[in-house]
Image 1 (cartoon, rainbow, N blue to C red):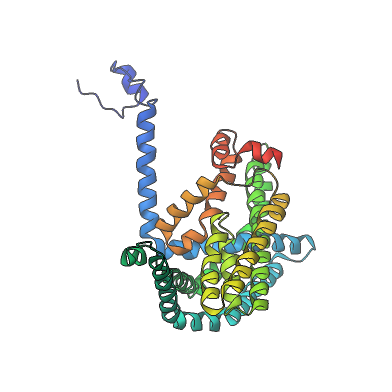
Image 2 (image 1 turned 135 degrees about the vertical axis):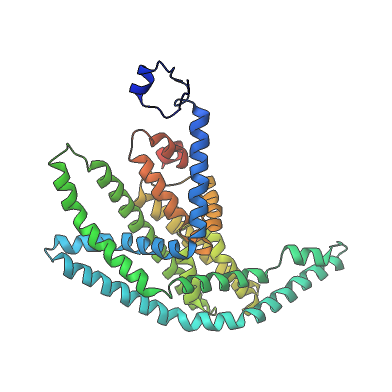
Length: 366
């Protein structure tokens, strides 16, 4: 008699077909299915990068705008008017940002070849100095492996990709509007659902509340970092201070690694434009700003639990950068942090969230 693996329970009983109790409970099988599903999802995300990146940016902007939207609603302002005010604020911020860094970005992109040539000359001078004191250096191999001019080209490419994504402004803005409309109605839906079930929305409310709090704090500290960096560089007279302040703001969403990456191109430019003394002053300014904001202010405001392991930060940077390109690198930590908060919101998955987080002993001592 033929036996089919997808038979119903009644069919098995009637025809006396034995049930393989290990088939559904095998940990290895579940792992393989989960891994295969993960690979398929990641491949789909990478293939849909051009559509997925604007959508993720829309979610990112909408989550940042939720606290002011909720504040306006608490002031008894109708939801439609509140959303209109928030959208006007987004548009004004976008126009202001474009006006501030648009010209600087164009000029910087044009000057990148000049900066690359200058940095290469300085690198050759350093290698010549080493050779002069008797240290033999394989010049071409060193220049190929450690080309300082590549940092300038990388920054120009990063800004070009970001501005290319924001070129589809209408799609991003419309998506943000619909997300905010849905967000303003979600509390009513949860209340309606709570009449049928007992406290069904508590987990969701905790999840969204933690996400809003994390994004609001991170955006505020990143903005403070960018403003301080831009002001310090403007005082010292470095070219394109607003551009480097914007880069510090964006990369501050990537803890630990981001502050270092944001400082490299500005320090290299200072080396070209000034001498060693001012370059050291600029490096010291980056160090002070990132230490005060990232190591003192942010942990005190953020509190315990809302953090990631340094290893997880690095791996998320590599993973999301590979999947979604440069924009994925900027959104890597917010995306991973969203996953961690979602895991922390459930008792069944909280242990995974703990593994993604920082050292519990360090959090307790802080």
